Length: 301
Image (cartoon, rainbow, N blue to C red):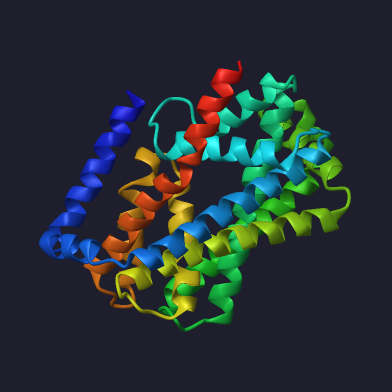
């Protein structure tokens, strides 16, 4: 039922998008895209996945999970494959938890490590967006730029505040609030050395920077030329919106957000939509190694 609702939302989003673009022109743009530049974009996306898997491994090592880099890379690709290709009830994070539990690790610890990986990744995205919007203030309308800065600072501040909740001891007396108290306690233990936290956030910034480079390369593949700083400001909010799991693998939401944000600077809607569709297809292609790793692991069991 949940996937049917997601499918309906995806279809509705594309219905409205196609109403405002020339469909024939869209197909023509996609058909004439440059394969060589798309291949470069694919390399950027794969690099982003590798670096994200490396960050996850660093986090799990702090939790005394003793697996190789190769193991985490394979598990990360499997998670990406389930997220992008298989619209099942088992998401990518669940796949990673199952992988770790099959190695004999505690599921709660595995969940916690993946949760921290997700949160640190999100903070890295906010930091990248904040830096880009501040450095290139004026590239977009000031109201939009200030909104991005506000959201980024609020998110980063909220993460910083989470560490301080351990000091508020009365939270432990309430069932719901106790969750945040325990989470703060574990985060402070995990990142007793704050330089490790900064390192992991920096790695997250690089992860998202490669994803932005992916979309930038795809823009060049369809002769959609705009300054790189525009992409640094416009793309992270799109990623933020697609985190909300209300459509199939972000399809429709991603395209609508991309078109809406780039419209603020008068960009060609059809080219922006073509670029976003190419990115969605590229995410599927880049996740395909996960299918091999998944089949390989099933045979091993």
